[in-house]
Length: 227
Image (cartoon, rainbow, N blue to C red; front, side):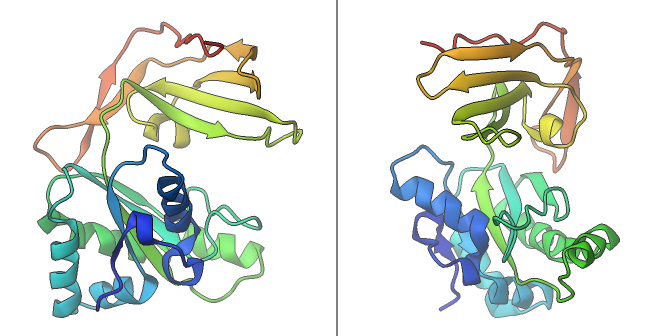
């Protein structure tokens, strides 16, 4: 057995990492999550070293997923209470086919060797290379996307913090736009909203293994979050 499982079956952080297990928890709770699979760290190591059995298992696992795909790091210790590793391990977006996933997985595996990732680990007192699990998911084509915290990360208040912009959430998480932001009470009432500066959107480039940046108007996103 390869150890590659559908996301809904990812339940062991020591194998699949917190990101994969968190997505699995969301799916088991009935939340809408794009379909995908979780690769354990040993399987990713085998792919990175060119193992033919691992390549065959990967193709079998991802061939039925709707394309394009997102290939995301889920290293052990990443997205944990003690360290987020935000921006340290790469995500490869708009992977056009199952056959292209193996190269993307290798890119994610190698990103754990980057100077930035090594420096980050040293600051935390972690000197060993982590076991790098990987998540492969179908990539959505959203009109708008972003990030939501279920608790205020600054004050700890029981409120939702949302930042969003046009297109893929990559523009938000990479810091390339100033997103619209919202504070929302647990009741659903909007406590505060601020317009950002969003002059372009990042979207998939159909039929290509990259993304394109589209110019947009500067109109803010102002959904009625109280509904």
